[in-house]
Image (cartoon, rainbow, N blue to C red; front, side):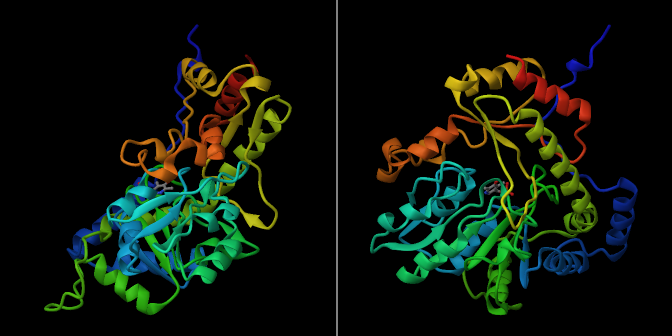
Length: 373
Ligand SMILES: *Cc1c(COP(=O)(O)O)cnc(C)c1O
């Protein structure tokens, strides 16, 4: 008898719009012959995202890395920027692309977010900004970080790639700091295939960013700064409008999965699950578990391989740390002795399969794999 355990359970699966509805919108685009450069779907998506996310201004991008790079340009950040090694590599690459020196600060061992207690010690006369990440969509201590930034006259750029729709006490997390960036990559909670956005507080910044993402063109004849091309096209904006209508349903399904995983794993010794925080509307973008090898009786990599052999694909996210990649490992702040909590988390984490249409049977298989040793 063939068994359903031959079926691979992937770690993620993209939220896709209904193909017929998408085709209808494509017909509209074909009819208008306006396929990029601030078309009507682009305008509609910016407006609807502002409403959905409860933010005043948003600028769409072609991915989630370019708003990081572009906002550093817009805010004229130079010198050194304090950031976290526990993130996707794009966070630090955006600094490197601007000729900025990253200064890594260790993380909180529970949330995985930059530890505010360690930021001040890393500030030098060359420090101009802080770039934290809301890891797995868990909110950073934005008030503490803002107080430090205000005291030292620093800008704060949040990499909020994981934090789509996350709210704290009914308010968007994306309004923290000077700007926040989003990624709409296929693997994220909300996707436009590839795509991203920058969230800002004022119209002036919105205008500046809109010029910068279109080569710096202010009008037909004036270029205000050396901009880049990172505009979102009409096809992906239309796709994004359709996905926005179903993202709440997708988040609700993810929440249910998180609940099932938590209950099933609560008594497994040596396995810690990510938890919800009071007052936070989470988006369940990832479901990391952290393995204590001694208590669990198997280390993270052994479990990762065992899962793979059972066709359950986890992801060691984030491992290796950004500070371990060749570009960055020579930096003084990249020394492992400076980042003990980050190393510990990176060596213990596995993100479990998490997406909107994961079946109950698939969840059972994931859980069985972890429980049965
Ligand atoms: C996905 C991601 C990015 C990059 O986004 P892309 O859309 O893939 O360019 C940046 N930072 C973090 C934390 C991410 O997870």
